[in-house]
Length: 93
Figure 1: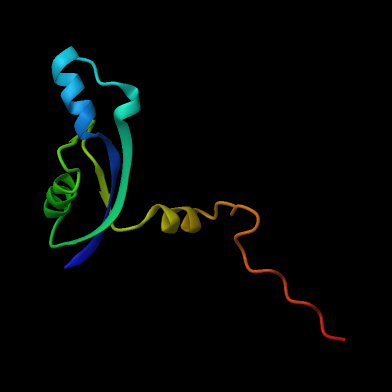
Figure 2: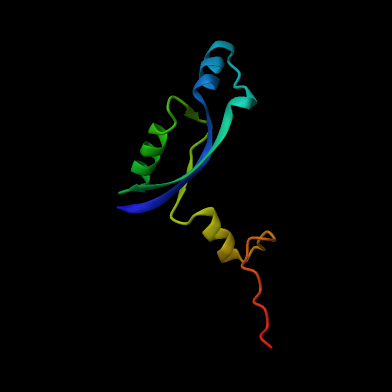
């Protein structure tokens, strides 16, 4: 088994019900999904993530990768937010 990172947007259960009635998806019912899932293949990772939506539906096909967003940003050398790094050591006298 390998670890896959599944990311995407989905419409929650209430939004799906409203969309079936009115034909329009309310923007307040769209939620982000980002989770690491252990699976044998990307198709299985998408299937397991879809089961975790609990009645929701994807707005578009989710993105599956082996690197998390944090790992991608660190690899690109993107700056970190202040306060998240370790404090500098004090010099010894």
